Length: 181
Image (cartoon, rainbow, N blue to C red):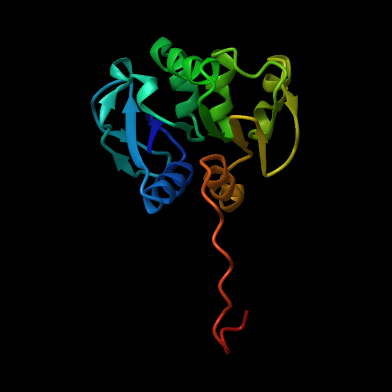
């Protein structure tokens, strides 16, 4: 199984790394794609090297598109190749997971009309204007589309992402005695 993660400068570090590592834990091959083939830096200074430029991506090779939060989503929506990739995933019925401001790319792709979504509170009016039904929840799954509100909701987002991929949640393990839990 393969996942495509779109990144650009000023990605929200937590919303890239937690889902990325969670995918890797499940054995999913995650590919980072960026508009340019140079290192990109997150809002909190973490640097990642993309695996491929977005214009070389073939969406048919992937089962999931992940769009992290942060100002990077605004940068990506200005790149026609990123908009095309997001549009292709939605139109072809492939799974998409976007958290926080990641929904901005989906707005530009014309992918939200009639869909139930959540997003960063600051863009809720934008998703409504794009025809989406906004819901103030940690995560919302509407068919092939998973949206998350933001970094504070990452545990729920990661669980919902695994369910979207058909991975069964692991049972909660009991805490050892004396752990204070």
